[in-house]
Structure formats: C-alpha cells, structure tokens
Image (cartoon, rainbow, N blue to C red; front, top):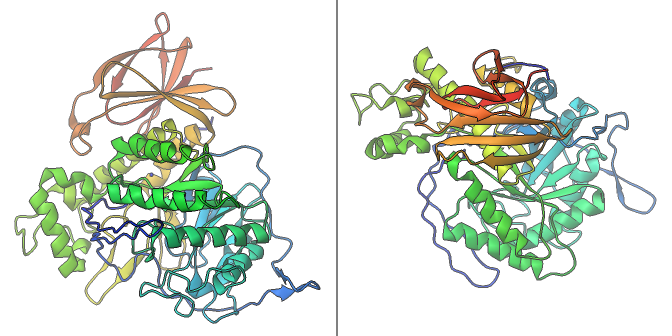
Length: 528
C-alpha cells in the first residue's frame, strides 16, 4: 500500500402525516439557514441540444463516441459527491488523487430542459468528458425547479408520470445522452423531506416506477438507485418509506430499483441502528430482499452534534443566523444575543475563527471520516460517497459565507478562477481511502469495553487489517491521556498508521502488541 496520511443537520423535526394507503405526506419544520439556495444557483444555458431520431423514430444520442468508458473489474467502496451544484468544474483528477474512482453530479430538470423538448446537455457533456477509464460515474436526476411540467409550489411533482410523458422523456434523454459512460442513476433523493419532494409516498412510488422504466429503456444495463432517505428513524419517516415499499411491492411488474440509498449525517454512533432498520425493512419484502444499500451523502461534524454543550445557546444560534446570515462569516465571539460569545464547539462552524480552532474542527472531521465509514460498512453498506468536493457559497454586500452545516465538509476550496485546491481534510481522506477503498467485509470485535471500537477489515484480495479507536467526547476527547490497550495480532510485526502522524512499526511479544488509544482511529496491518 502507498502511504499518505461521511451530515445533514439533525435539527429537531416536527412532522405531521395523514396515513391512508399510499398517500403519506411529510410536513416539516427543518432548520435551513439559507445561503441563497443550498442546492443550486442559476447558470447560463450555453448550448441547447435535441436528440436526433433514428429510422425507427427513437431518440438517438448525439454524444461523442470517443468519450471513455468504465473498465475497472474491482468493486470500490468509497466515492465522493461533487456537491449540490456542478458548473463545469474540472474535478475528476482530484477524485482519483484521493485514491478513489466513484463520483457523481446532480442534474436539475429546469436547467436540462428549460423549454419543452429542448435539451441542454452542457453539464452532462462536461462531466463525462473528464471521466477516466476506471471512473465509476453516477447522475442524480431530480424533478426540482421545472416550472412547466410540475404541479406543486415546490416544483417537484410531475403533472404526468405516464410512459412518454415529459418526465419520462427527460429521464430517458438524460440517460441516453450518457451513452453508457454513466453506470448509476438516482431519482429524487430525500423524498422524505418536503424541500426535495412535495408529494405523498404513493406519488413518489409512482415517480420511481416511471424513472425505472425510463432508465432501463434508455440503458438496460444501468443501475437504478432509489431513496436518498435522510436517515432519521422517527415514526413518520419510517412510515413514509414503508408506504413507498408497500406501493412498489404491490406492483408485480418489476422491483423498480436496484439499489437503495440512505444518507448518514447526524450522530455517528447510531449509524448501525439506522442502516439496520432499512436493511430489515427491505428484507421483509421478497421483492427487495438483499437489495444493496449505499450512501450517497454522509459527513460531519455538524452543529447539532454539539447541542448538548448548551441547548439554549444552540437554539439562540439558529435564531440569530436566521435573522442575520452574515454572523456565520465572523467568529461568533460576540453577537446581539450572546455578547460573551458562543461556546467553541459551536463557534468552530463559523468562517472567521482563529487557526487553532479551525485545525481542531478539521481533526474532528478526519476522525469522523473513518469512524462513519467503518460503522456504516460494519452494518452492511456497500458503497459510501462523502459529501463533498465543493460546497456553494454566498456573497452579500456585507459578507461572504457558506452553509453553517455543510460549508466546511468539502475536501477542496474553489479559487476565484474556478480551480480547486485541496484542504487539510483532503489528505485525511487519502489515508482512509488507502485502507478502505476495496473492502469485502467489516466485522466488529468485542473488546469487553463499550468505549473501545475494534474492527477487522477484510479487503477484496482477502488480506486483513484492523482499525481501532476509543469513543470520547468529540471536542475535548483529544486532550485526554491515551488509554493502554493490549491487542493480539495475527502477525509477528505490525504497521500502525494514525490518521495525523507517521507510520510506526510495532514488534509483538508472542503476537501481542500494546497500543495507546485515543479517539483518533488507528489502522493496523502486517509489517512485511
């Protein structure tokens, strides 16, 4: 191995939900500190294309035939999202610099087909032109913001879901345009959140049927991803997805999705519980038994994880940012409601903080990258995409800032000329990917100490490594002294990689080594 060195804001959610067959609809009161719009900003429609018709009257992609295709025979574990809004940035080289090969961009209906029947493929072409022969590409295709073929105020629900409808044609033409260069396609994600889907569970099930048919008609070999569930286990969210599965299972024509997607933000230590609920729920249906589960969004830390420090201050911060978004551009050492300043655990999400606090936040993210990944894989997740390469920013007359939850999760910073440069957490991800990008299985090992998390990782070539850390307070835990832990290894000598330091070679005594644990994960492998 070469050696280099996955959070939706879990704010309180109030949900009301009338249940009647396939008609569940979620209402929510979800914390959104808007930065204009987290998901998209307008882009010029530079080129407009129409797919040509072949002799049989079917749409025929005009996509250039020289673009590369996928040629990797291995099954990678890790990926990364570009971000909410792709605007032709060159980023695929950076994906591969991370030591991974999987990525995706989002496709918006209003940008792709602003006028009925006229398709703008600029973003799709730009994305595919960058792909390497071993890049595993995905498109997430949403109905959002189309103002001529949707029926709700949020512009999410197509007025017609029949075969040959505008929605069917939109999905079909997008998939055809990729000409087999994109492997996976996902429909509207986070449908259990009304920002992304304004309809009922039953309507989402019908959308999923049409999406599946359109994708498979355009590319029978494509993989259809459904869900993007926000990952909360409240009864309302559970009932939403059960209703979707009921509606799909009642239609014997097809299973309607190949892979299910769950987003894993918020509390990292309940990740196995959340994944297991979806696994057990899917397996209860013969049609969906053993359907793979992937994660197209995960990340942390987020402010909600530190609400425990001062719940009143956390609530005040939400209110203050709603009234004045520019507060997050400062350092939160003095605000109208808190002239004494906010706790450092909340201040670290602001953009004007001191370097030492910024570095501490980066270390927390580095630890969470490994911890979230390992916990998800141990629960049976197949693939995870970190959120993300780049996050949107906003400019006002007074300040420049990004989202208080997602703004610091990206691994790269975009410069004024559009180029991307790695941030500190980019290198932490490289180290993780070196160990975890081709994983066959992850099994938790009981240590008798509930705070010691030890896992055996079986890689796809059959080799085994271990990862271990001690559960501590995420902010103050790094200040505690190390905990001695004796560990029996299957080799005579071991290489130990700590996320923030150099490799260390340990010689065993009767195959036992002594480790000094903190909350920073260690990777342990055989020293050849």
